[in-house]
Image 1 (tube, rainbow, N blue to C red):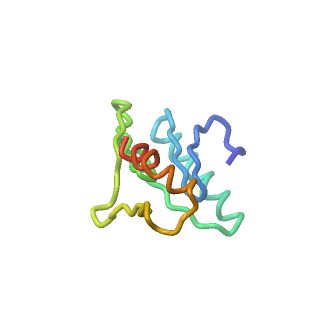
Image 2: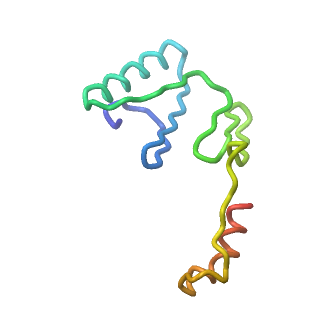
Length: 104
């Protein structure tokens, strides 16, 4: 992806978010370049362009306002480690902080 200069890319394993401040025509050209790079490496990609609100991982970004909020699928139910289960003390000790960080 570094082959395309000027891209601001958020990356998490196999998920990417690219935000462009370009005209729709320029965005279309960059989209084609990205698809060509992936095809050259025998990879598949799905691109959604010209969106004002995007979900990336577990966050919803409102690109016009710069606001963001947590996002999850309606069927997603968070699971936490029960503190009485057989986990190392360091894991059990960090459960409250981990839950608090996720809720925040």
